[in-house]
Image (cartoon, rainbow, N blue to C red):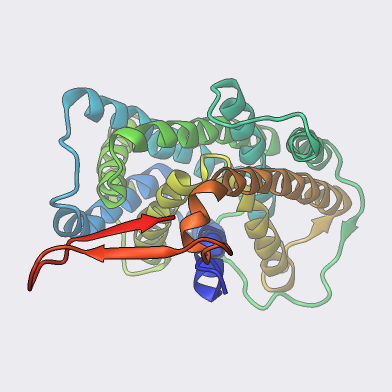
Length: 371
């Protein structure tokens, strides 16, 4: 077996894929915890603020001790760049995103979020962060992007037949009846958040080249984004009781999303962004769409429409065409590295490896002569 073979090499190649599957599974619970918390009365802007401040506090000791010697110096220009990244990744995007969840549904939001992959791909191509060769895999990227966008249009504009639930919901989320009453407003907020979300992945790729400390960058984004959200929330929320959190679903939502999503999953995304590029991360969003739809229909009793199912299937087909085309970049990279892998191969017939050891006892100097 060659030096590149074995289970270890396979795991190393697909490690980013496995981590992103885990991330989407973690995102699934975010949708339902957030919806339950908002129905309970939690203000989404207060939630975004608390969630990221919790993430910053949890991630700070890991960033301080684990990256103390490898963390680059933080200059004023770099801090301003991180502040802009935090605006797009945290405060602006998530305030629009979770407000839209109040007016639509978890299934709708999780499906529309799939457009981030297409938007990120288009932005990456325009900024030359993503290669686009006009071969079979290159065309798959373009066709996949167009198909996924068409799926979003189908899901947004076409409702169709509504399927009834097979039985009673296993879990009932109690709360305000004003949720899901303004689909137009919710749709606009969802699409706007997707655009700024896609911009954040492009900015991540740029910032990581200057500040490749993943845990520290996650911590900075959490603190800065939480502070930005706090200022915004203070300007529009004037009731002090809105900031109060008891030992209920609100606290559970804040802790889970702060530690798991804004902490662990953000760190995973930064690592995958550096390894595979900004387009790779949102490619896996269709998985959360599937997880959310299954739980919403069978567990929470949420209804599904023909438009939602058809649009979701179209989006998933388009995005995995894009994923297949993206894998062509990995194949091209492996081929470009083939000449450097000759050192791992057995010597060819007719080639002799002779070694001359120089020096006395304790001298490990070794000169290799190949004839």
